[in-house]
Image (cartoon, rainbow, N blue to C red; front, side, top):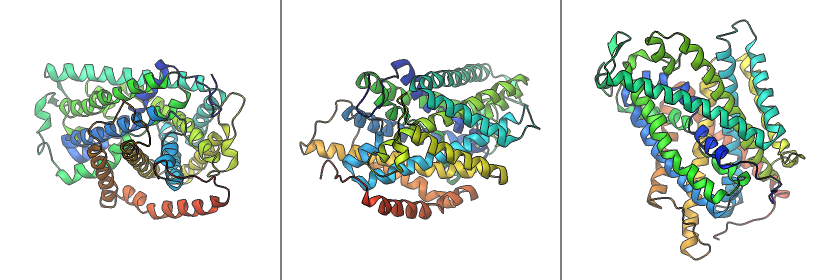
Length: 459
């Protein structure tokens, strides 16, 4: 069935559920948890729990908005309805910034990890091959994208579940490994639960927020989903237990299986655990899974930005080319624009490989915070509009509103304010904020002459 937006309802319940799961398990966990454990110690689990709670409220806010109006324009459409056209413009381009820098980071990660198997193969060529693969998938069909994401997510889930089972067994039996014993004692050993102080835990919030990025992808998929009013609530409600088990549970078990001092940024913490068990083959297995997770992220980035840019192009807020859609009902214009930025990122990586991944993820986090903040603000305005009788509020609602919404917004604001006090990579990202604001303001003025008029729904 073809929609008014030119898309087709090609994604079924099985695929949407796995897209939601894939969004909740990313390279932020596979790649970044080791370095964060080394910096914050076992108390890192507090960061994951706090950010996970906010992520749950964001998803429930998204669910309420999706049930009000399923759209592949997602939060860009909602920002236009409830906050005004300027908010739609700003949030849409910040979301694009998020995925553009995320894609650059993921391609960097892919080339780095393939280098473990083929150290003499040019890494920039590896990145281009990976980009060509996911670009072909996105240009062919939505159904192919859904199938690929289904199997990508399946592999990630199986890997995490295997680790959880092994780690629980190690802790339950007090297994000796890595020169110590797995158990609760590792949570307070080596200077205690907070070895480097609580401020370090706060400083880790930015990277944890990035780890949770892409959970909102299920909302963008709503416009191409069969029976979204039944499928989307189930997918969103499942996020909370996935966060609790896959993220908080994994980090807690990592801290219990080995002392936090055993981990570091140069290796996946899951590989560290299996290597301590005397299973060197685990390095190759986890290496493959990390590559898969990075490919999945690039795949999702092209998918989501293609839809967002097309929604904006149709309103005159993005280049006209971004609005083009092919005979396969794929918005190839927006997808190719994002792919072009990915190529520029590969060129940048070729010349400046140092720190590229961390800086890219830090900048991407600014887009994540903007996206989440937009969803929360739109839900608040939807609730206010419903209170004035301007619309009927869906039965699937954000719990604790509006207090949970304002509290989550305050949390996101704190994450941004702490960035300049963290490491050098986060400072670089923080100082990019004025440049991003200036770029968005300039773009808003440039597109003013051809932008379609519109006012917020509740004004």
